[in-house]
Image 1 (cartoon, rainbow, N blue to C red):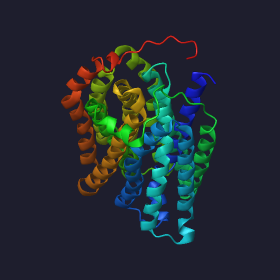
Image 2 (cartoon, one colour):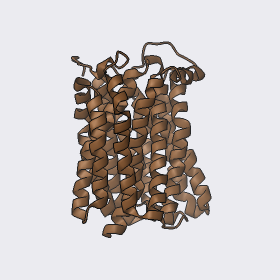
Image 3 (tube, helix red, strand yellow):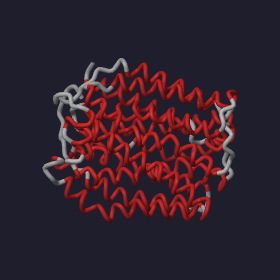
Length: 403
């Protein structure tokens, strides 16, 4: 199997995990109601928070375990199967009489499994030679396309039956698990290390705090759109679940299609411009969505925000792989996913609580200004790291027939 074929299979796996996850988002209000949680935004908030709380807890554990084992794909397949089982149990919850508190517990356990599939697939992409920006761009386009497809079809499934997205998510993860066991791995040449050693070595790389912080804020905006964005388009413009899914797709399609070229661009021009300038424009675009006077302008703003997000995301992930040592790359990206999952949690909580107390406009202003603020406060650190020997200047020119 060539490196390109491996990259494609891993990207398809990342895509499948995101499809399964986002199937639930457009119809989250209907799904939560069917599972006994009620239709208000706070119930939807806790339904999403439960899964990402598990993501935060287990992302680095999966990464460090794979570093210690010296294998990623068997663990990734196991995580995908565990996530599928969690979705099937959720779909059976009304029949089994599981209360909403039990539903949230199932979400915790399922999330602990699913993050293994997601995080380890991205880590396996980072293991490939050929340019960190190229590899993270492949991950980014898979994430974006998965979210785009999941948002479109998830809304239609939810309109047909609130439980259909759960069955679709389970079937998708089973297929992902089968795919993962067919993939040959290209791990770094360093010897195996213990789980504790892999996590400990992260403390020796405090420079990772910079891309981790940007990852936190970026994922916070994604969590915000996954929850508040859905309720915003449904309540402010009267859209059904399918319509809300299409509005989310207006963000995710350009976000997906531009990730790979943006990743290659960051290999050539460095990480600093995409991360800092892109973040400022991205934050302003989020505010534009919230102040749009009509659904057409709001959707156009979503398209612009998706394009700007595509500029930022692969460069930020690539900056992590630039500064992490090869033998701790799994734990480093696991840590990035921990901060990303914390960002999702913050987006759910901040967006849900702000919206329920102060309204949609206040929540859009708060989240958008946060993205601008991090670029202004930490921008100098990004320029310093991107130009340092640790990151190789953020530039990787590749010429390889196997690419």
